[in-house]
Amino acid sequence: MLANQPLISFIDIPFLVIAFALIVPITVLFIECSAAILPNASEPWSDARKPRPTVAVLVPAHNEASDISATLETLLPQLTEQDRLIVIADNCTDDTAAVARKSGATVIERQDHERRGKGYALDFGMSFIEPNPPDVVVVVDADCIVTEGTISRISRLAYARQRPVQSTYLMTQPDKPVVKDLISTLAVKFKNTVRPSGLHRLGLPCLLTGSGMAFPWSVIRKISLAGSKTVDDMQLALDLAIIGHSPIYCQQAGVTGRLMKDASAKSQRSRWEHGHIETLLNQVPKLLKESIRQRRFDLLAYALDLCVPPLSLLVLIWVAATGGSLLGVALGGSWISTIVLLIEGVLLLIAIVEGWAKFCRADFPILMLLAVPIYILWKIPLYLAFLVEPQTKWIRTERDAVDTPSS
Image: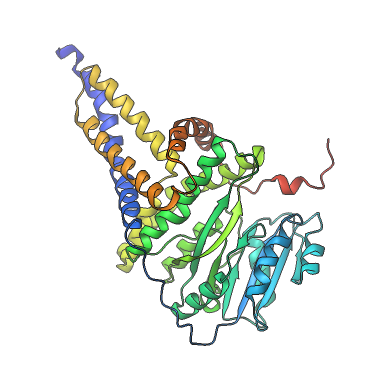
């Protein structure tokens, strides 16, 4: 028995470390999802009796000729005579600019093949409107459908509270979706609706998710938008929060984008997930430091929220740790890590079921959850790729290849 003791200790220690490390992200996820199922919070205050602030809608567009008309058609009826709709045709090689002009938008074109990315495009647009700035700047991606009333709602709220506002940003399924497309759509709904709803009900700020965002002019000009990070919007939320302007979630406003398919979908998901992990590793220590220095609980809440990795990765880590811990017990190890992991598994399951029941049941049958293990297995190479070569640069998507000659 004594001869086996070093082996038992070697088995126990790593799984104890993992089990206790998972307490924070799983508990945070459980609290967010549990808060989200509480009765709907009232709409954040914004006095509709006051004149609506002036608005400039910026639409960064890179080779979006096939989609941008639909986006502009949902935006134009929501604007008043004092508002402006500006499309930034960024490094386009298709007819994006011509299509946008025909639809009635003001178009500015940018060609800079060295500095590429959404951040640079938005910075270009901000410089264009700076001589005659609006009260509020709204950012909408060029492939999104904007729900009626969204522009008025988020611009009024942003101006009244002098804080950024994030509307609900969801994804439609691609044509002829496969199982992984359905689960991806479900995962986006958890990230962009369930968890922000829980944070809102707790009176806490949310992250920015990329489209349907409103910024008071006086606030957004404090931050440089020029950059090409894989998660510009997430980083922007953190930068604004640190200087005292953390974003508000507005569930009643909405925009809808679309998931890509095949190779484009893989690169899209790699950007999102690698960027999320990179931000988690780099920004959580900074947020913890700033929360102590500024004595601000909202920054601590941001740090804790960022500690939750992508849901599929969190489940994958839990499954691997639980399986390894059970194997350790079979070899004579301690039950402590297994018990902790099983409790965490119950909390994780409750969180997922709560979010599904309140927000996803109408669109995602319960039996679809049985396909989650297959989806997680499909994601393993994506996470392994982060360890080898994280995707940290802009890459081409299916829209970028429109006018590219075949080799």
